[in-house]
Image (tube, rainbow, N blue to C red; front, top):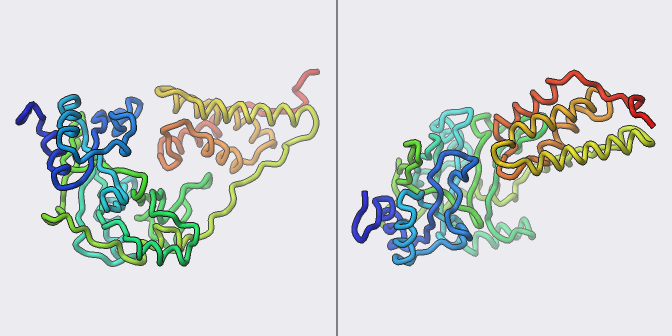
Length: 326
């Protein structure tokens, strides 16, 4: 409902953040990923975020139902740990996280997908300098995906030894990132809300030291190198297979919105021909597809993992080098 000065109710909420000293920006409220769900309306995204009341009011007059984009990192002195309830209930994920790094009193917001955002203070220069002593190439505390587990062609693999499965989908938003802030409302009725609000002065608690070291990569478990594919066969057939695989990867990578899933499926079917023919291993084929996903598609999405698996297993054709004619 329009509010004072023609600013919507959501606009007034955005103005409240701006007046508290936090830069915000408008994001798309559509729930359709193909239409840019939760993407910025403004060209420069979080880099254009403003705490100027006139700027914020103008944005929400133009997009009255826009979600409230909230930059993380030094700009707002915030670090947000994102608990994605894909396989486990959010309270179970939170309990496991608290067992790993004991903390209390951090503000908590619920996301439109029933996940949780845990809000901590972005570390100061002294903390970053201490972490940099252990990791000299550390520049800032940025975004991290799969903090405890990582997605591999073979499935989920623990990044942290003995990490419980509840922590399989924990991400971090820091420098260079943003989250959607309450009370943002999606166009399908799903919304963001505070479960434990920040105090009136927005004094966020520091992230637990053990958790911060993991986020910074100081206690990173070494990742295995991605598989390298040797030429499958020599001569003309080898050149053909290499060219075909490069073409499949390029096709998958360039899939347009609305056709991404179908295109990846067809590309997986094509690589399946080489798996059955012995020119590629199953793991190599999966690694290639995960490395060349279309823009906007994450390797952590269950749907795309199933698509790749079905595509590789669904065909019956076997590539035979002798089938090439001169």
